[in-house]
Image (cartoon, rainbow, N blue to C red; front, side, top):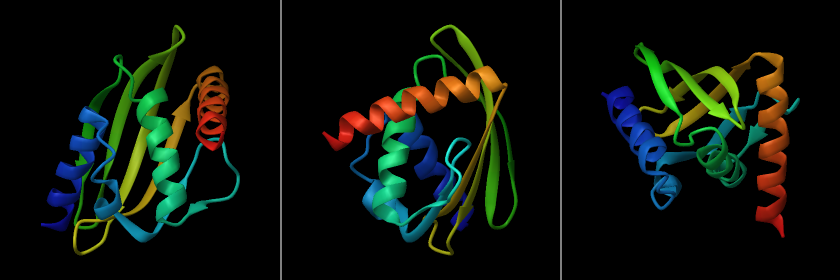
Amino acid sequence: MSVKIGLENWHHFVTTKNTDGLDSFIDDDAVLYSPVVFKPIEGKFMVTMYLMAAAEIIANNNFKYERELTDETGAVLEFSTEINEISVEGVDMLKFTDEGKLKEIKVMVRPLKAVNMVHQKMGEYLQKMNN
């Protein structure tokens, strides 16, 4: 049941880009493994910042989930999008707590040109957030 609740909240966030519910949805000890940052991003605040950026950069108007696989602890969501005329394919690997909160997210992106574009655009967005 926690995966179902977690996925519903995740899809709502990705679809609406409404960040108001992120505080109650993301676990305090959440961890994000980015395709472009070497060290894991840890803690609710930092994971929230990265997800807000990703909602704007990756989950743009071209974004769609192609496939979804779930088990008792989480889900793997295959996605496609386009950023600056570059096709991006990727996977969100999500794990949830027993309460349905986001505990861990790993994001994989391909091809290299797409990884570089995501890196550039996410960096620019996060820099603006810090100013």
